[in-house]
Length: 392
Image: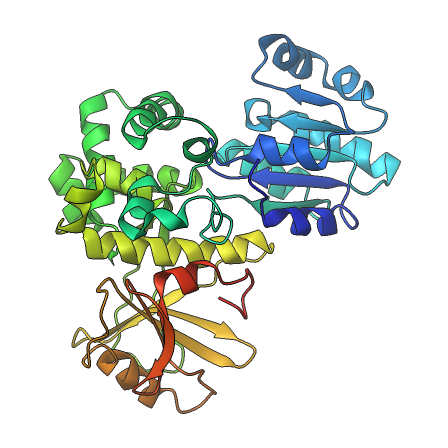
């Protein structure tokens, strides 16, 4: 198992909450992490039909078996169990009693927020980050990393991305998401997912997205909401506090795993990726997803934004730190260009009522240095930074 940075957060939360919840996309390593950290507790998977039936028909007796707590895997398969769990942990008043894992679907999230409010410490576990992969996949080059992404199975098995991703999409994405949406036309849904991948890094236009897929904007919103809840996509909202009204209010759409995005775009090898028109969008998607992972790994909300005015000037990522606002510009080129800092300097000049950190540029080359008033980071230096809001 590749060590996960969320381990420290889970151990901390186990001291203050009776229930821990590890949510995230399918195959992101939730079960592996739970069993590695809490191997002393009994493990039960609710994918097992016998265990699931027991939990559904007699939840009180099902939970009574676990005097020392347990790891309950795939708990979204039996969301009604959470109400009974609430009663039990309230009686026992023991921290770190139960560990739940599951793909974050609507019933599960409703159960956690309603039945276990104030009782659950939650960690959202995404695929492996660049820092977690420092000794595994970074040495093969940026294009190989963009092609492979971060799903653990691609690093602990002898399997190629071209073999793994189509099976992942058909086994999990199409099965789980289609069940939630009751999609009748599989080809239409497949087109929708691919069109979302093609729009990663762009302003979200639901009407145009729906029209391209032959569905209404309302249906597109519903389908996208489920992709977000399943941790496949992420909306980056605009930052407009104290900047006036002449700013976009439309969010941007990003995939949360760049390897899955590349496969959905039909990119099958590093040679094709290096010259592909979507390479810049893939690199930007990877940087944004890395920033999200850093926040999630320390138990924080994403709280990331972008800035764009009505003239089209844009800063790719903006977030608040104790030292002030941090702006990040993302450039996939491998050599610094003198015009790169223009947009971020324009934004910095507008930040007059609060402190601003030195602008940062993350690019597809190597090295770490200062240039034109900006902190410039190559992709490897950026990837291996520690987790946390201040370090992001």
